[in-house]
Image (cartoon, rainbow, N blue to C red; front, side, top):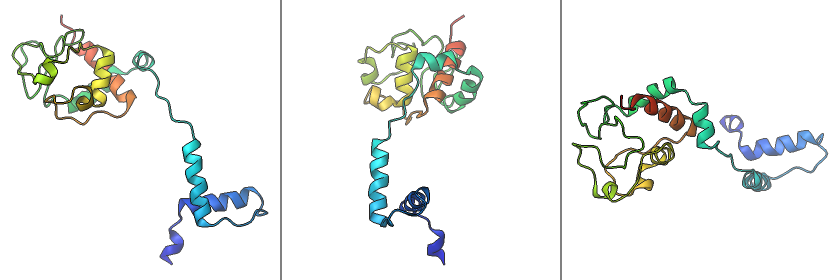
Length: 162
């Protein structure tokens, strides 16, 4: 009885194919349906992300503020803010990476010659270890481009030096 409740993608594909043709096509085996489903997945176009400028133009800084919660365990955003596990981010945009006073950066980051722009920050937030292998940031990254854009929009507001 339990096996009847387990509907596989191959079985669904075969049932759909038969139903769409009024049942006039010969039955498809599970192996054929699997092969057909795999071929359809391979030929489907990749989902394209919107470019960063478009995402930033529509970004929600308030949502970014909520996303920042995951960052604040390591980073402060205020003048005279303590260095935590990561550096204070006040005024970091348009500044060369590894130059905030009072924080001991990794050799990898110091040698990077990276300048923090929305574009480099977007790459960094996606995967810090890919942008600068050997850096000290222990963070896997943020997968969704929309989340990164909202967070960048918030950081642009919150870290601007007054």
